[in-house]
Length: 247
Length: 247
Image (cartoon, rainbow over all chains, first blue to last red):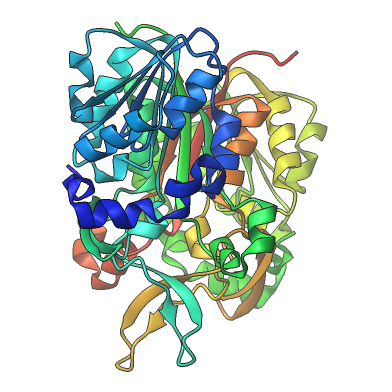
């Protein structure tokens, strides 16, 4: 799915990102994501596309009873294991579409910046709904449709090389987009907001939050470039829960 | 609020728009809006910013028991009255923030392309929630945040005068925007998707639908310019309901 994470060159470049070196606090969306996470106490938690395992460790540190992090990159899972001492966390190299093969259901399923790599979102949402316990929570973040629509993921610049505006195009054309990330050509899937939200609602989820995160004040003050993040939404956080068993 | 509708020149220009001359069928968003409207049978219905009254008449024709359409433009209300024979519909010239002065609650509250003219959205949502009966529905359409963010509401063109991109800028800056519409300078309020949705959820609404409408196939085939509407979202439809009385 996103096997570039197993390429040593890509993996090393990813390791140099602030969010890899410094974890959740260095992720611009974390302040907002944190506010929509449920109480983890005594919960079973699954993280789809867990990467370095930051969210798994956060859940375990907040009294989750059992945490499973899955990622299809073997190198990511090795990295997560090397950073984790907590015995309540298990990491597995597997495709997130195999979550129904884990042989259990969960109280909380989270997925941070991984689902835009997934082609069949509706099928994944169905599986997530099925593997959630009644009353369980699903929290996801993805790149925002405004960010992914046009395809270049680049500002349009003026003749002085300043950012003029963020270009939006092909918004309703829900296909793969190929963009440059850390020097690699990466495929991801653009979907409309309509698709992201309606698919959850049609499956039976109750929407609790829709948040377009903004960088926290201290990041905005420390880093002038972060001001650009206020000019267009880059990420989308959705939090929902499963109210009743479907008939 | 949007008193330009009472200016005779603006009013006459508005009268020449397809949606004014031909009604709901000429409105690109109607096919999508129609799918999220509730069953009107025996319902009490309020339309905030009713304009010509198309949605009021649709509700009455679909067996609504009582329909009230309000608009702060006297000329719009006169126009609506002149087009309506059904005694179940009343039109009133009043500000939509006075909906709590109508002395009754409603089963359905709708608002089509009017709430982007409103400065205090949170206060309006509070009032709407309060005037809705338990189980009642609220359905609104507004100009999409992607459409309003940058402020010009114009495509960026290339040197051949073709549309290159839709520009997004100042997305998180929720202030008034002044744009040209039918030769007039019109003020409207840009809000993020986060604000549109979270305000409903925080008030207690259950979200039923979030839809970015696309023009129907026959409009796309008849009118080549309509293809441009697939390049960026122009409108946003939200449908929600009031589950329980708030404590």
